Image (cartoon, rainbow, N blue to C red; front, top):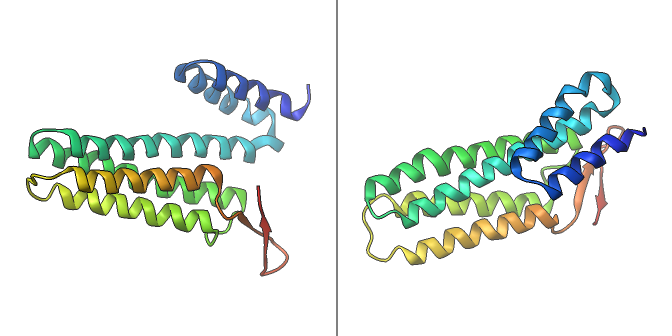
Length: 175
């Protein structure tokens, strides 16, 4: 069994089954981490990406709830207790994943993602400060900003700058 066999079988399980099976695959990988020390970094990156997507889901669900709830208190609770922690966790896990992969935070897609997620959170929190009659305009702006950020994060728009250990320069890698 080669070094990529375990990782590939996990990806196949994630793609073809439910979220519970994907989580079980992630736990399986963490359990065998000690037996495969050369794949420790790969396992950390997979785990960080998984946690980052969970945090992004929390951010998006909090943003949607902040605009769709009828009561102001529910909208504020969604913005402050779902969207804001999702935003912070997305940034924390994204930073950790970038550090593990050696990706420079100066990459264009990271800048676009950070700016759009910050904009989405600012619009969401601003919209729940008081009861507004026209909530659809900030909702479109916030959801659009999240869509732009998710697209930039997924497709790595502008390539990736990889940090090199021996020099101060970066290398451009385009997908």
